[in-house]
Amino acid sequence: QASRDSSTDPMSIAALTNPTPAPTSSPSDSRTRPRKYQCPECSGWFSNLSTHRATHLSYSSRPHSCRECGRGFSRPNDLLRHQKVHQGDYPFSCPFFSTEPRCHPSGGFSRCDTYKNHLKAMHFDYPAGTKKKDRAGAAGKCKGCLEEFATADDWVANHVEAGKC
Image 1: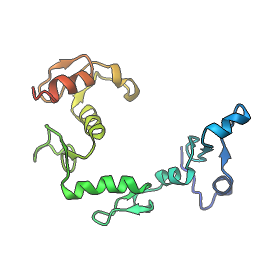
Image 2 (image 1 turned 120 degrees about the vertical axis):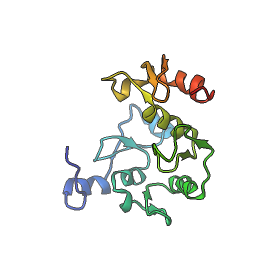
Image 3 (image 1 turned 180 degrees about the horizontal axis):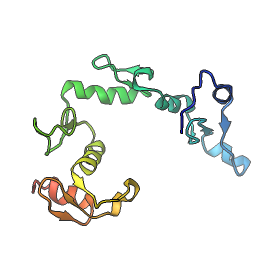
Image 4 (image 1 turned 90 degrees about the horizontal axis):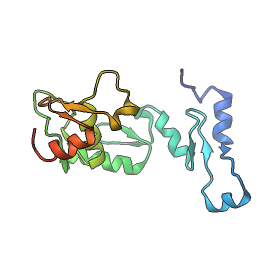
C-alpha cells in the first residue's frame, strides 16, 4: 500500500486541518476521557495527532534531530533518550555483542524493554513460520548455545540474565 503524500492530497490536507474526533457513546464520555483524533495515514486514534503524524515522516524530516548523527525523532523525550547512545550511557549490554557479530551498532541499550526486545528478536531462534504476533508464547532455542526453552521470556530470565550461555 503506497503512502499518501500529504502535501498534494487534498483529503490529507483536510484531515490535518479538520481531524476526525473519536466517536463517544455518551456526553459524559467527552468530559472524562481525552478527545482522540483519527490519523489519515494509519487510521489509528491519538490524542495528539500532530505528534503522532511525525512518526510517518522519514527520520531526516522529523522535528527533533540529533546533532551528533542527524537522526530525527517525533518527540523531544525520544531524542533525549537517544542522545545517551552518544554518551556511552548503556545500563543494558547485549551479552552476544562482539566485534565479530555486530548485532546492534553499539551493543548497548539505555532501556530495559528495548534491550529485551533486541535479545528476543536477534538472539532467540523461533520455530520456522512463527509470526511476530505469535512469538510471546512460542518455544524456541538460544542462538548462542542452541539450548531449548518454553518461551523467549523464560530464556531471557533463566538463561541470558542468569549468565548461563
